[in-house]
Length: 347
Image 1 (cartoon, one colour):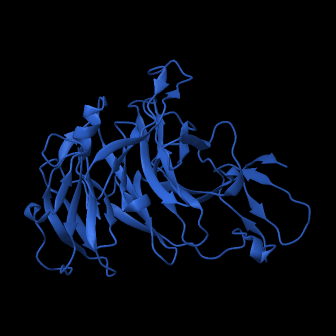
Image 2 (cartoon, helix red, strand yellow):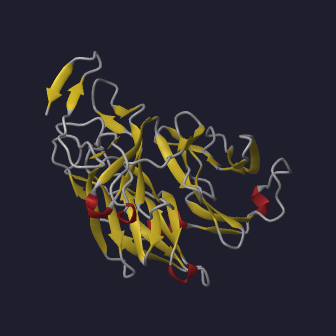
Image 3 (cartoon, one colour):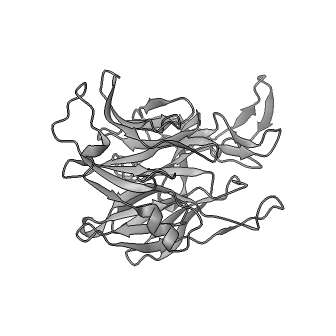
């Protein structure tokens, strides 16, 4: 687990054991105020060789905006934590991005792709940087076009702000957060081929901050950080408007969890349990998905019983989608009630 710190160069990497105890693994990482918030280590990836890859966020420190490598060999939870001198490699992604014309840099996430090379999403560059393992060479692998802003608030175009990235079936999938004014339903999930060509897989999403693949069915799962509002003041992302959603074939979206407080990252366990970090609360949330009738797979045929899924998007304006499942054909009646229990719609 990556901890951002308190802007006193106290960012660290910790191990959380199954008894929910937190054990420091690496301490002393840079942590500084960036755009009003402490920024330090952001995302982690355990390499097949036992090394831990750390995405260090933007800042002025020598280690900032870099991919750091450290061995996990010999470490036991509760033992002596590692220090910065134990780092095996530092790859300066930010310095490279700035040399390629980026006005800002924020190496945010990475995926291991073809030939075991690293593909690093730089949210400031609005692109993907390829890091060749054998040579250490860096190159711009893909770039994301800006998104038109249909409102009079903010610039006429918004940065794509790529965030989460996964690699599967010889393609990369990248979530786009979009820049100010962080319009709802303007984020996207992109598909990037092995030649770096970018296409839009799904539009109409909100503040996508991370991606993962559900080990149970292979579908993409995306994390919504929250919903931004200009008013009432002060403007900002509203608490408890984050969520977890699944993108299915054909573009259908299932709601897995809502009401999360600024979630920033997620990882699936092999058994399908999902762990989500809350930036605002400093917590790791565990989300368990019991097998339900709503989860229909071709090999299972019709569901065995009635199922009703959470609507998406939520909140919404002016429309939302409600998915349901029936074990047999029949008349469906849908009634909508407000928080006071009064019926406000009926189909």
